[in-house]
Image (cartoon, rainbow, N blue to C red; front, side):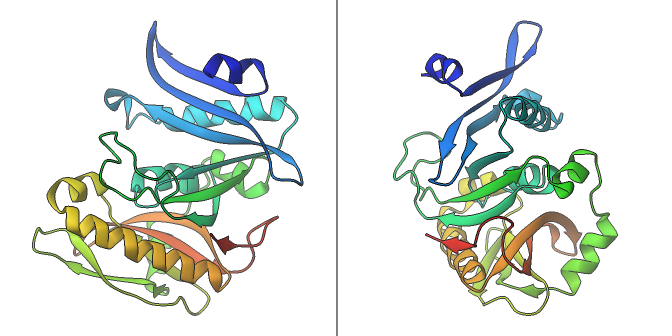
Length: 251
């Protein structure tokens, strides 16, 4: 399948340490009835090579290759509870999530998805937009700017510390005002291991929160991790307004 993709407009990219495959990115041609784009099927990095910006470098290489094909947009989907994925696709790369996809892949049997509902959030990555180019160049809000925006934002998901010591959602509200934030677990793997019931609570709360935000026309334009008196916490940051080149919406 990867050979077929590579020979017919798709991309199969690898990151190597000597002859050892450390990470990979696979994407394919997409068509939505209006135009062509590339759809990012997956980006994976071996655990021992994570936290070395390898995912970022793979995506930057993928961007160069897609531009060379004459296309200007990459789309993809990731688990919205995965803080690491949101940090890459939204924070570092400037992708704009625009559609919530509940239980997108159905039941999967792999170790990461087994027993979980496979919700995903789609993002669009406008490869030559000024905002994307600024993020790729390293222009990212400072921790103080993130904190100020968080403090003046309305909370869509209210949380409290559960019995396991991990935060759990307690209520979902509609976003309001010029800025809103939507909290997700900082460490979803710890949540999955120590509090499976809490994992389900997060999944359903996040699903309701994104749907409410998108239905009211809010746009996710950033993602931030903040150090608070409750430890490190992860937030999608939202503002009113249409998603560039596409109306927002939930499915």
